[in-house]
Image 1: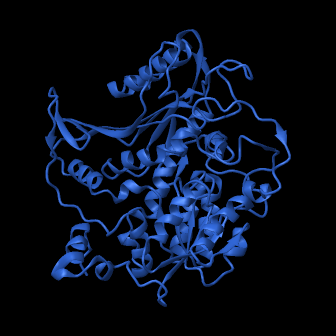
Image 2 (image 1 turned 60 degrees about the vertical axis):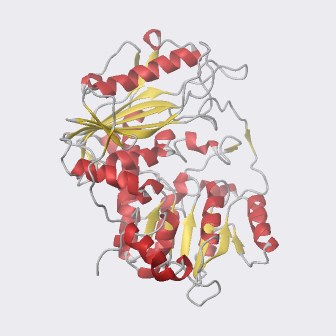
Image 3 (image 1 turned 60 degrees about the horizontal axis):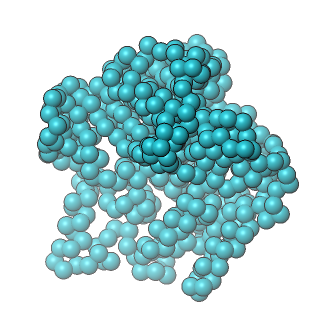
Length: 489
């Protein structure tokens, strides 16, 4: 049977006057026996988008909500009641998974719950849509892949760019060889707000009564509650999040890795940067309670092509120099014959963009959500836009950068690592970071220090570092009973 392309799908949906409701492979009449019954885990923030996306689809019903915050849970259930729709509510995902009538679980929790939720759902016979990144560490991502395969589950990842025919065409254009070899796949994930500047310091206190903090902690080590954890700033703590490179960054990381022909995991990685924040009366200069860097440069060698990843959280706000440094989220691709920027090819020495070579691409139907439901129905994971294997590899690249960073040490700002001379785009990123830190905070790194991680060699097939016990220890973590990601799924 020929693989259904997006073009075929759209043509079929309007041919002979047949409407989308009848033609769509994931479209059904609500209330029919073949409805897909979905439970959403983690319904605050991004989870609301999950509910909305599934609620719009014919033949799909959101039948259960799960959240450790009872206030959020009650608010979510109320919206269903207002529509005269039934929905079950759970604080503990383990009780939700006992319901054999649920077909799929959509996970939008904190990062450190993504893998365990995915694995448990697969073991319970549920298909899974899991938010990015699919894992909190590299070990977990591989276990997700193993669970999906062992239990024959459909597992889709929330990297929506995989549903973009525009990005697919750029990737195909590179693979065609028309523009020569890929030299650098570069990505930016520099956003503002929500803790990317300072989160200050919050005192240790009892958790709110409406939050089940024990379940919130889940696989992480036992520790006291403070208000910088629940519900967003957990992104900036190693036990729960993965910093910006594993937050917004995993979207751009996925595109950057996708663009590398045959790219799976790198042969080496190095990362550098720091967490520098604006000074306020309640904390010392350039520090806050967070742990992850808000400025980070990561460079990976894929056996030829470099993947260069830049994160700067100090943007979209006027600095001490009065300038407002712009947000930048996106990808650019540098090849022997020129560069691909904004979907156009720019030959070397030219500032005029050209249309890319026309390369036909095949994709499964629908956006990232519709595609998931389509594959749940067909049971063909080959049609997924963002299968769990690709999810694991892209998330792993984020983790690799963080491992190098975490194993680093403070060095004088005048230290210039050799990797900056690998390509001009590497040097440009470090220069942008140092200039932004100076312009926004008044911190001259040439007179201060920054965190420089070691250059780590990596075995892509074995998914382990070469003779580095400390780095290999960070491929996983100690787990807290009973929230243990199993070695054998």
